Image 1 (cartoon, rainbow, N blue to C red):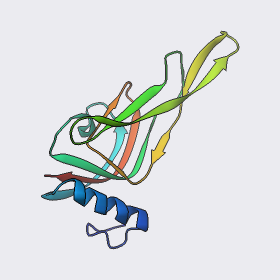
Image 2: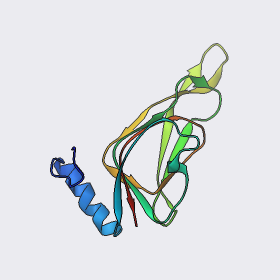
Image 3: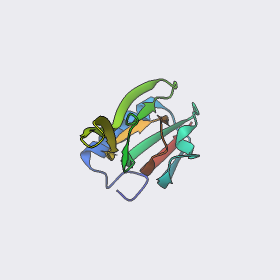
Length: 133
């Protein structure tokens, strides 16, 4: 898909676009491409007047840790969590004889959200649109 009018979208993306049009009456649609650490990004801030249409979303972190894995919560326009995904895989450290977690990348396509909440500062890749009311 390479235009704002969605003429080159696949069937799944067209379906997402029709659902988004029923969610809010938007005044502007802005293409958004973000790649970097999620700390300080616009995705963490709640604003009732925005919805993100995500065509490609990738989030995660790398390396072992002794704390529980990262969790990412997606919120709707009413600032209510409506999805939660865990970004980590448990494993048993035989040397230390304790459970540990290792990072796991999340890759999601074609969904919408209003804001994100994470426990840690993972790496985020977002390609999609921001709709403003």
